[in-house]
Length: 606
Image (cartoon, rainbow, N blue to C red):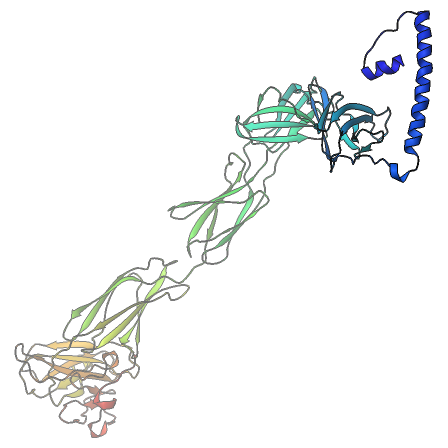
């Protein structure tokens, strides 16, 4: 009984010396306790006997039992919390049971009542436990009766201790992009789960990490920048957290100058795009990492310099676009690391494919002669010729009518027109032409002024021989009804498809009634037009001239035609218009004085 009392009170009372009187007292007490225990057993039997009117129900167990563990300073503890049962009986008490178990769940020692709590206390702390150990905890409820109920046991493991910092950390740069580290375990350590290496480039954020798991005492940090200073630290971790970092140490990676790519090649795809290809350089043992390639390029005039970068070193092709057509470009490739780039390889020349030139610029038209009208056109070259020009091509004529085509030397930037129709809108389309073809045209329109002209009557044309066996056109006319200050004689080779130009002979004598024109090709037929120049200040009745072809359908001193070869021939006088088309010695005449062009006007096609 003494032992039972001592165990209940938690006292450690030393055994007294033997005493006969005391021993007799103990024997008497033991006998009385035996009687008391027998009576108590009979009472239990009576109470516990099957009797529907005397059944005893234990209180319900607590709810929401939660057990948590923590380890600090190499000492672990468990905190358990719960909610009261519902409903809460009178005289409610809680018993906190716990026991140690192994990894398989075996309970080696007996269960211990760590604490008895009244109904107002719903948590308890179990202290002085071992780190990294497993325990089973449950909460029992008692309400003044012998029987009790209990919660489901909670299994929990106490955390390990937090390790101290690793010691004897040694670092060494073994390549331009890697550093080797080794260290000794922490002085205070339970079970280490992993090591963490912290490092910063040049000692500045961001902080980067490498995790060593499973934990060892040697590690190589890869993918660093060449020729760079790093600050590194090492820390150990357990399942309870991370310990302090080691003393920071500095290390510098090895310098590396990357070699350039090999066999750079360029191919023109179209007029604005080329494709570059190359091979990676050969790297030796201990060389660094190439992160990508740079392509530097410019055109043959060195106007601007451009840089193209590949995404990474796995790419060995580059498409360079937005270039100018028919332009020579220079390309050079180099290798790139994280911090620098190496020297470039051989320069490769590549010319984009040609394109048709752009339109000539600043095209201007001005009236350079009034009687008869004549224009001068000026311009400046195309902004982009894309190679040498073959010529300038001009399509011109009466707007919405037939057009003539003239080729202009590419070195010239001025053009003088043929004699034009009066009071007529003319259209001019100027093209620049290279080996590819025609570019877009520069388009201009111009309306000639309305002129006042005098048509002499009875114009005739004869073919005669002159000195040294030359062939001449002898042109005669009658005096006009109005005074003139001279005459203009326009003549050209007759063509159904007009391609030549008018020639002008000016006569300043107002009394002249004839003139001779020497022709170089006597086998051709010619068209001749005679116009009187009005005396200024005395406007007569006017007729509009017609030159034929691009000059429209206006009258310009009705024409005479001389056709064929040989000596003089007389034609038919067409009437008051005084114009004659002499067919020459073969006797082909225009019957009834009819003009070969409709409405008595020439209609030439260009």
